[in-house]
Image (cartoon, rainbow, N blue to C red; front, top):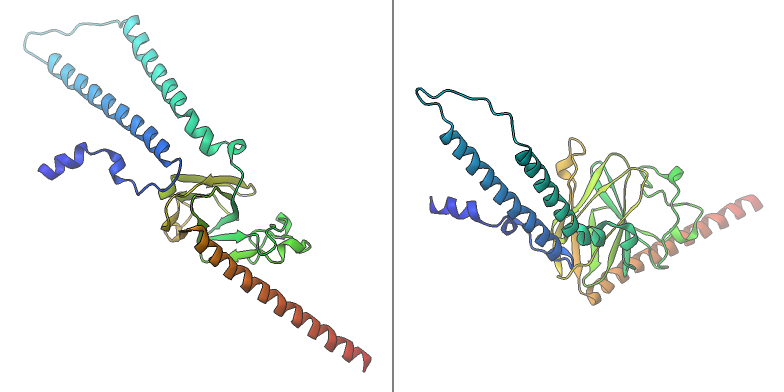
Length: 278
């Protein structure tokens, strides 16, 4: 019984995953404020409910009477919630502006594209040239979820990660360009206090700054179909040196792949020329 009572009065934040985001503490503080306000209102409401049940319970020889209401009471229970909700709105405005307003997204130290689909995530890095290829929605397909423009040379070396693994450095402003290839999904990073719906045909900027190296969860927080449960990924946070090492490895593989493709194209071109000459 003691364990049950301990659970009942514990702060809900104790059930949250570890916060590793620069703005996570502010969001947690906002949640704590709303949570305890809700607890107090719950206690007050049920205290009054029980008190009225006891006071106005049925008793022998007691007749009911008509009560036409009170303007003062009605005004009070209208104005108090109004002040409460306005106060919560003002209290949360700074956190909302900082984390959600597109105009407040900071200059990125690292920028990646993330696209959701049934039932997974694809991630795109700009490649060795450091420039994203242009997107063309008319070129989107199962083989090209991002719609990378085949005519844009900057997109030839873009790095596509298909195993839902996001690799990023700590203590840097990360900007994710988020969209979906089909239905609504929701990009949820519990440890970073990030949750943003992904909308078809729209790219939305999501930002965060991680403070601790480690492996964390990527989840979809929007019911998106029968295999919704399978939309789980991993986000790996590194120190800058380890991140640079990982990224250099990916860039090296991409350069090697491009060189092989060019060699194959030259071989094919030479064989075609020889065949025409003969």
